[in-house]
Length: 424
Image (cartoon, rainbow, N blue to C red; front, side, top):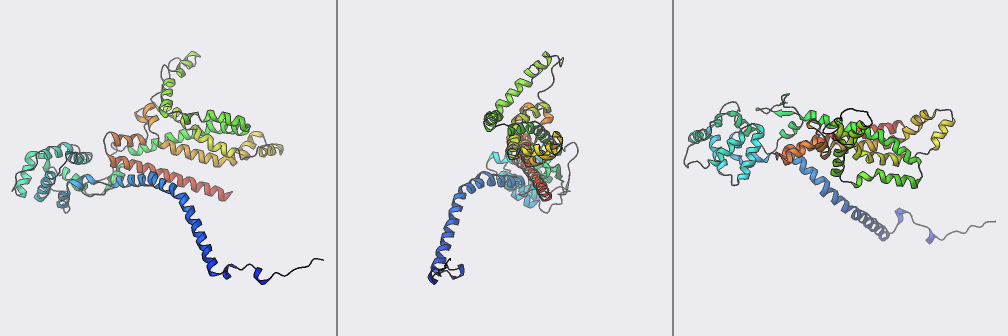
């Protein structure tokens, strides 16, 4: 017979609502300390992400819409042109303000930046601005009409309203012009948005070419990586680890070294052409270098591990008994593979495909060294505007377009994944 012993009232555990005030405050302090400790552990990572990732992207987006060259040097001129109709010759006060602004530029580098910015809008503006800048200052005590006449004597192009339209258009510190140009749009002299002429439209085709090359590279990486990842997943851990070292070899080799190796292999007198000619497959060397084919071959070689690793990690979690069970129930081995096994590897396919595609659209070195003029991707032109033409606004605008399209594609991928999970 089991006896029960009643607990004393002092031994009963109090509920949360009946805790003493000092004990409740101690629990709150303990929870606060625990929360602060957790934040302190993640704080270095947050600071690193902000400094290395968030701040540069923010600076890129700001520079894509910033237009400081004209605003910093021709402030008076911009104010004088604020009420100008942009259809007739500007008022004489605008000429007087222009002379004052040019005379007030202290550094020649600032005048050069102004000249380059206006020259990107209208050809010939660089020589016009620099010629007038070197002729400053004008004689003191001149009236506005006399200043007008003096500027026209320096260069008659100052009576051409197209140069004044370029100044008025860029007098604001913030402008959408770079972003519009990155998608083949522009503002006309009156400020309306319109498409650029067909012979000047280029970035739409370049962006489409970037996506096309990236999609082809992703497809070939999937076709080559899926069987290899499946084979590795069927091996023992020891054999799989040894073979995975060979898969990871491209990670340990410089991109320039790999590209140089492909140049040696794919050139007209390279190993590939010599081998094909030696076995009688071809009679003359194939054009494998400085074209789209060479770019795709090298990019697939470099990016293949990024497809294999996600696939392998997912395939290791899929039991092989599923395939044997499907075959034992009467399914053909090939049908069982595609209907039972492949759908379970879709997360790896999606992750690997997204990773390879995103890395591909940002490639620069490989297409620049192995491709021709029609094989360059958007990153090439970002580097061109940064290092050659020194147009940081346009370079940042192209980078922003690349960023937004990448985020849009990632959003589509997430939506597709969510819909598949909900259906599953």
